[in-house]
Length: 256
Image (cartoon, rainbow, N blue to C red; front, top):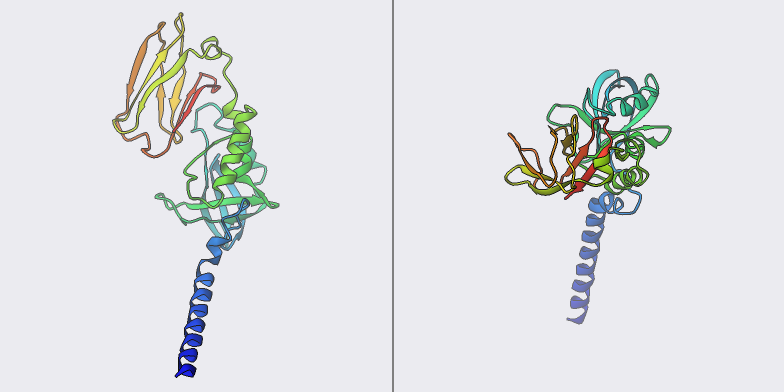
């Protein structure tokens, strides 16, 4: 009887070991991506950069096919906006060069563009664009390089590079224009001029982390102005509010 019980225990232990090994084989690719420097478990592809559409969109030749690539984790200023050419000019130096593309959790976006990180000589170009202040971090939550994306953006912000360069306008230097309220549910925000003098804000604009933009008008001393969105703009879980002057220099920044 004792021999039978021992045999059953050994069998149970053997089964448990097999189950543990099976779980490790399934989850190991994910577990190994939890360190400070994350290694992707998606296969990388070799490509040739053939055209730069804008600072975060390129065309690449992949296995003989022309593919539209949306660079991951970044958003660059839209066309005709200040700093719009910074990232694009940075990318154009790699046209006709061999690059490496790497995907993340999603393969394509709603426009059927491939979502990828781009590398040149092992240099992550998405991160370099952020580090130089040519873009802000965008839809980075849950990405395998989330930590690196935020570190690159923080570097540019701390060093006031690109879009993070501070405005020299007097109302900006005096921190006159502030955000009194942002309601991401009701889609409106309120600005206030806290200074004892009026601020000429011709050409100044507010934007979110994406492409939504609100142009501002002058504000008298202690005046408040409410700006309502005609569509869904502010993400309920996380977003940014930037205020830039006419030249695209940073006046105010808020993140939630």
